[in-house]
Amino acid sequence: MSRNHLQIIYSRQDTSPEPVILEVKRLTKSFTSADSEQTIALKDLSFSIRQKEMVCLLGRSGCGKSTLLKLLAGFIKPSAGEILLNGEPLHHPGPACCMVFQEDALFPWLTVKENIAFGLANKPMTRRQKLQEVDRFIDLIGLNGFGSYLPREVSGGMKQRVALARVLILQPRILLMDEPFAALDAQTREQMQSLLQDLRRQFAPTVLFVTHDVTEALLLGDRVLLFDKNPGRISHDIKVGLPQTRSVDNEAFLRLRTHINQQLKEE
Amino acid sequence: MRRVDTNIWLQRSLPWVLPFGLLLGWYLISSREIIPTYLLPHPGQVLVSGFDYILGDPQKGIYTGRFPGDFSASIGRVLLGFALATAIGLPLGLLSGRLEKVQLLLGSTLNALRAVPGICWLPLALIWFGIGLKTTVFLVALAAFFPIFLNAEAGARQINPTLTQAGTMLGMNRWRRVYRVLIPAAMPHIVTGLRLGMGISWAYLVLGELTGVPNGLGAVIMDARMLGRNDIIIVGIILIALIGRLCDTGLHLLLRLCFKSARRLT
Ligand SMILES: Nc1ncnc2c1ncn2[C@@H]1O[C@H](COP(=O)(O)OP(=O)(O)OP(=O)(O)O)[C@@H](O)[C@H]1O
Ligand SMILES: [Mg+2]
Image (tube, rainbow over all chains, first blue to last red; front, side):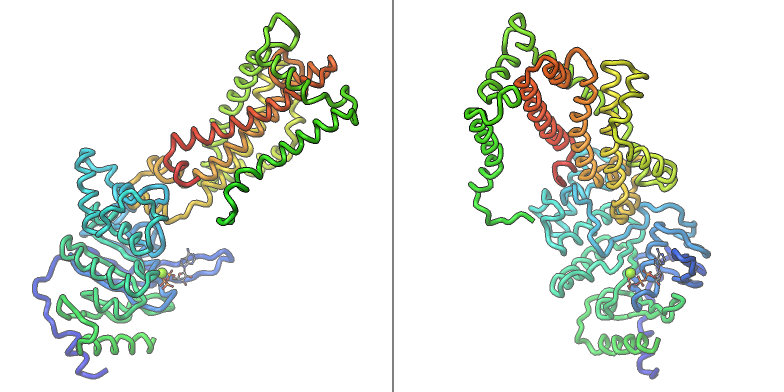
């Protein structure tokens, strides 16, 4: 790797280091399949994420990205290792770490509004406050007028907006996104990317974002983690260090993209 | 999938073709006495008897004006048996669909029991409960249990795991997830099971009532057979068919009224 690359990658200094919010220590996950064969999906994975950071996970299919997110969401238990959220071990799945799924995971029997309001049921708020809050989020995601539609009556992009709103409304400490825009067409995906950037400016959540798309990772991420297969582990931890508003034809952007593509090929 | 371009009038009228055709055939056969009336009564006769049975003055004959009493007796038995089957079958089915241990515990036994035709229980039920309400309710409940249980189980099992995960993630504990995710997501299957259960309830009602209870729609049919009143038998059959159909529609409407998920998913 040339010196030139290194300079680009590590040029921007961390201006104000936020505190670490999520720490993963030597995380290992293995699955036993039906014929009792062991698959090691993740091995000795360690990394940490600072508050408000947006980290993109890139890697080949089957290298354990979804598994990592499921572990962080608490849907499955690690075989070994620790996940610390604000220094405390993560126990139960819950609104602290919320996931936006790739596929359609809205409740099909609830309207857009009811889906967004779903998690508010537990909150100590009056009915009116809840309705107002839901309306505010409908406005934020640009779905005014679609509140009483059912999921099957809106487009794929709209569904993902709703999926985003129903977790953001709970103010999760960490937002986990597993290829949330992969199923969308290019134009809708761009719209969703800019929506996500807008929402980040407003809510400043910590985000862990899985994608196959190097461009998407570089457009959105503050940091990019490259995953290696067999067993799944992090091969590169790259600080993006590009300005907040990025364009795909910027020279630094292109160089970084070539660099990452090379890394991915070498694996 | 239903074709969209089917003519709307065709759609409306086709379901009536068969009933009217049969009726016409019956009328012709009876009018020309191809089949003697002691085997198949004339439709006009059936109409008159039916009218009498439903609206007649109870003092005037054995079957006149008996319908209200028979109907309330029968519907009571059906609803009681159906309610019992629902109360046991629905929760057990949902549990069995979600928890492997419950499934292992119940699965094979219930499948073995299911293979036994309901009618086999009749002698035993008669010994246990005697002739009357209890036997009928027992048979109805037993028969309706299986479709309700099996469909609830299938519904609970096929739930998209991301929906349960989403429920947990959005802060619902186990108990609330049952009401907010499990039941709504399984609702289409639950509705199917309940409707099948309701249908089979009527079948087994007649079976239970054939054993010699004094009143009820099944009892009337059996009674009429002994007195050679085949017009009343046919009246009974038609009434059971109509009431069964109404019960099915009513049940579906009620479910749709009570549950958002039934309204939106079925
Ligand atoms: N429930 C499971 N049981 C057994 N093996 C599993 C299970 N879930 C994942 N695996 C295995 O773990 C490995 C990682 O899977 P994972 O879904 O995390 O990959 P991924 O990086 O998300 O892939 P993709 O980019 O295609 O989504 C794969 O080899 C997969 O077969
Ligand atoms: Mg995946």
